[in-house]
Structure formats: structure tokens, C-alpha cells
Length: 393
Image (cartoon, rainbow, N blue to C red; front, side):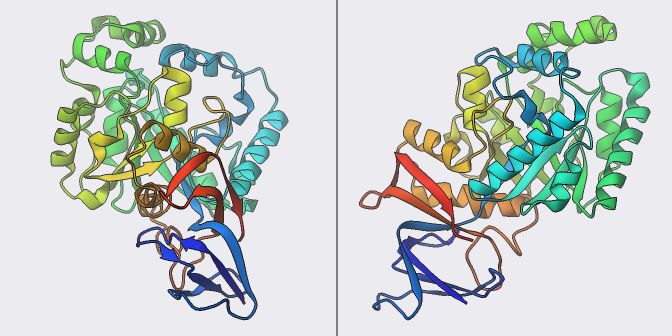
């Protein structure tokens, strides 16, 4: 048994507990959370800082870890995609697996307990199987040529079958609106199961909206280069998220990722269409957005909804740290309360990935992982540039 205390306990979804004590069994399961101002108890460990649950990284691409420092910052979405495609054969399978292991170890050291990870191949599955982190794998389908829709979907089903052989959770999702033919997007959504999690890159760049609104821009040119069929394509004249709403399956957990170019009108339309607020999650990846687009998402658009945090990949980030994402958000938006941001980083992410029975909060019966964040301004409850996280359990 361990009794762990700090200046404050942030459970993930309740008011911070001053000098609280977390009681855990030898397996790391929470037995109790004591709200007490009493003197230290026998065998109690006390730390300066705040204790929080293990973080949830709701969006990552661990299989792109070999691309760290490989694609220039500020390149924009189209050149970023070109960089990923061009590097496909520059690394061996073993090199990619080594970097996957590095990224997995890094996230665990950064206090991350759960990851929603996007995979196009099976290169990360072996590491996920033996990882200390809980993964939900989004098998990502993409392809704009109509005639290949069934083949692409079949290949994705095969990847899910491999996941099952490793006893790993996961399901098929679309990459984005611009990278799938209507036939492939329809196939995925029509065959979606009620207990699966729908996750999609949404309005990550302005050029994505230009494609659907006006049929022009860098993304439109790129798609036409890949698939000449789009030379005859007529844009729907609506934002890409409004186009997506025609396909999103009903009554499923829905994760919209990045959202850098979403407008208030888009948010209102999406919220109205999804209906059940418990099913809608806005996943923000601020450091990745800054790396690729030199722009950070406007979190205020989603204040009435469920916000989660992700790191994206080492191809678009210099680290895989949820605390670093929080620090960037906090520095640029000092009005965000630390309690609320920790909720985004823990409780909301666990709900989004359907693992909140075990993770996301420090509460009886759960095994969320225990982190200590040090160098926090405890008078104002704000993160500092030198704030850092240490995994205690």
C-alpha cells in the first residue's frame, strides 16, 4: 500500500484537494482519496507540486516517429503530406520499429497512460502489445479513387483483424474529407458499429475548406494531381465539416481532431447534428498546429463542449508531452483555469476513448497512473515555463 500526498490533488473532474492523500494498493489501484488537513500519516509520501491522473493523449501517430526533424516546420498541410509520402521508403522496417519504441517509452515517461493512436500499417502493433500504455488504435483508411474503395476498406479490415490477434482495441476510421472518395467514406460510415469510436482529421488547414467551398487552392491541386478524376469534380460549396456531416454515423462517439480552421457556424452545425453532447469531443493538438501552420486553435469556440488534448506525431512535434501542450495553451490563453485544462488532459480523453472506467480520474477502483507536476505557481494555479511532470506510478 502507498499513501501519496502533495500540495494539491487534482483528481481530474473535481475541485482540487489541498494536502489530500491518495491511497493505493500495490497494483496501483486507488483505494481512497482522503480530503484531510491532518498532519502527515504514517508511511505517507509528500511531494511539492500537484498530483494528477495519468494523461490521455487522444490523438497521436506513433508510426510516424521516425520522421522527427525530417519535415520542415511551417511548411503547411500539403507540403507536410508530401513530406510524409516522400519519406515512405527512406527508413527500414527495423528503424521504424525502433522509433516506435522510443516514442512509446517517451510518452510513458511523460506521464501518458492512454493513447488514441492512428495507424495505416501494423508497424506499431507489437510495441503496443507489450507497452505499459493503454492504446486504442484508429486504423485509418484513405484513398480518393472510387474504384479502390472496396479494396482499401478490405485492407483496413485485415489490419483490425491483426489488432485483435494482439488483443488490442481499435476500429476503422477515415483520415479526412479531402483524402477519401465519397464511396470509401460512405462504406466506412455505413458499416460503423455503435460501440466503435469515430475519429477524423477535421478542418486542419484553410486550404481544406477552399477545396470544398470553391474547388481551388493547394489541397485541390494536390488531390487533382493524385487523382485526375477530380478535374471533373464540382465542389459542394460548403465547409469540409458540413460536408462531413452528411456521412458521420448516428449515435456514436465522435472525435473531431485539430479543428484549426473551424468557425463558430461550423461548431454550431456540428453540435446540432451530433445532438448528444456526450458523444462529441473536440481534440486539440496545439503544438502540431503551430509546427505545420504557425497557428493555434481557438479553444473558446469549444468551451461549451468536451475538449481533449493530443500531441499528433513526432513528424509535427518536438515532443510527445501532454503537459507541453497544456503549457502552450496556458501561455497563449492565461485565462484557462488549470483545473479545466487538466480535465481536458485526463477525464475528457478517457471518456472519448471509452476507458473512463479505469483511467481519467483519481477515484476509488481505478488504476489511472499517478503524475506529479512540479514548479507550478500554487498561488494562481498556473503552469510555468519550467513546470515538469514526473510519473509516480
